Image (cartoon, rainbow, N blue to C red; front, top):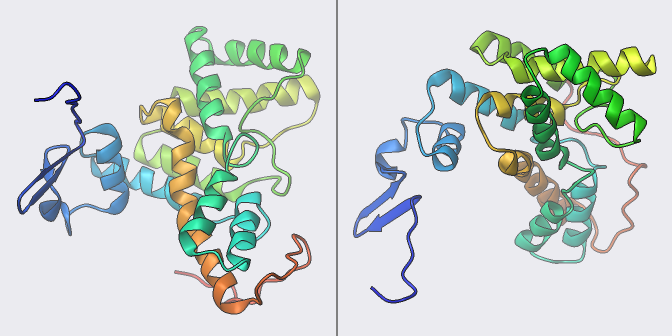
Length: 254
C-alpha cells in the first residue's frame, strides 16, 4: 500500500460483484425501493418498511414546485442556450441554497437546539422564538410566499403519525408555530422544508444531509423542465417567471 492509500466504507467493487454497505447490488435489485436504497447508502443499514415509506414520502413531496422557483428558472434558462442536460441540471441544483430549498439543514439545527434546551418543549420553543424575533433573525421552516396551509406538510405529518415518527422533533415544529402565533398574533404555517426537517430529525439524519433530500427530490422535476425546454420551446427565448400557464392533464386521482 502506498502513502496515499485511503479507505471507504460505502462501496466495494470486485470482478463481477458490486456491493453497497455490504449488500450486493444485484441482490438488492427488485427487493428494495429506491428510497430504501438511498437510506442504505446514507445511513449504512437497510431501513424497515415504515422508515422506507417515510423517506419515500419525503422525496415525493418535493419532486417539483412549479415553473417559477429559482432552480427551475435557472435550469430552463441554461437549457434554452443549447447547453446539454447535465449543464442545465447542474445550474438548477446550484440555485438551491439558503433561501430556496436550503432551509432544511438550518431547520434541523434549530429543532435539535430546542430539544437540547430541556424536557419542556413548549417553554423551550417559546424562549427560542422570543430570542429570534427580538434579534430579527430567521426562524427556518415557517411561512410560505404562496401556501397558507401547505398540503404537503399536512400529509407528511399525517404519515409521520401513522408510521410512528411523530415524536419530539415534530412536536417541536408545532410548538414553534404555536409560539410564533402567540407572540406575533399571526400564524406562520410550517412549510414543507420545516416538515421534512422535523421528520429527518426523527429518522436520525444529521443536519448536514438535510438539504441533500431536497436536491435528490427535485432532480427529476428539474430534468422534466429541462427536457420540456429543449423539446418544446424556442432557443434563447425570454423566460417570463410569471406569464405562463399549465396545459397538462386535468386533475386526476390515482
